[in-house]
Amino acid sequence: MEYIAASQSTRIWNISSRCVQILCTEERIPGVFKYGKTWAIPKCGKNQWMGEELLITNARRKMFKCKRCGLCCKSVSLSPLYAELNRGDGICKYFDNNSLLCTIYDHRPLVCNVDAMYETYLAYKMSKNEFYKLNYAGCRALEQAQIKK
Ligand code: SF4
Ligand code: SF4
Image (cartoon, rainbow, N blue to C red; front, side, top):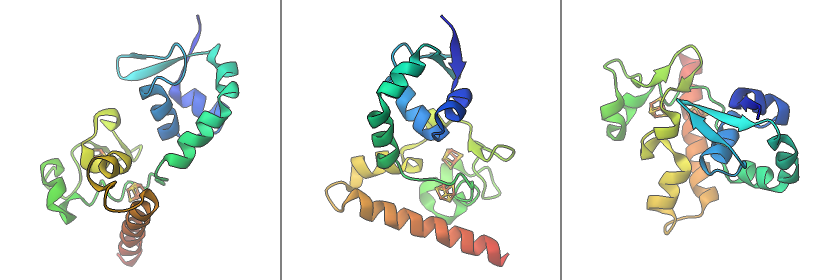
């Protein structure tokens, strides 16, 4: 069987890498498996993906829409919640400055996972949309601070 990498599948399906990661980690793609640190996605899964368009749409809708600017990962000194991640200069030790991505994304701490944080600690307090709005406001504040620099 022929396999494609997650990066290829994002291009083929025009969905975010995080959406692909969710589909892979939740084993929603038949036959998908992890090879080392990367996902191997069966090429024959393409038709099945098409048949699961609704599933992909749902995964998209449920996800926090991160622009992958990396600003939060470069600002871990702003909250004591991220203290253990600080490599000493306010940047997370797991942040890759070239790709602007997290090098431990699949195993990132709960505090870095908006959806998991919501489900674990906040679902009883507010709606997911409210929590998303708070997080989007945080992203915008980081953007504004960056612009002023
Ligand atoms: S600041 Fe917001 S948009 Fe940028 S990487 Fe962090 S969560 Fe994503
Ligand atoms: S662990 Fe990953 S997501 Fe969390 S701050 Fe570090 S680089 Fe960002």
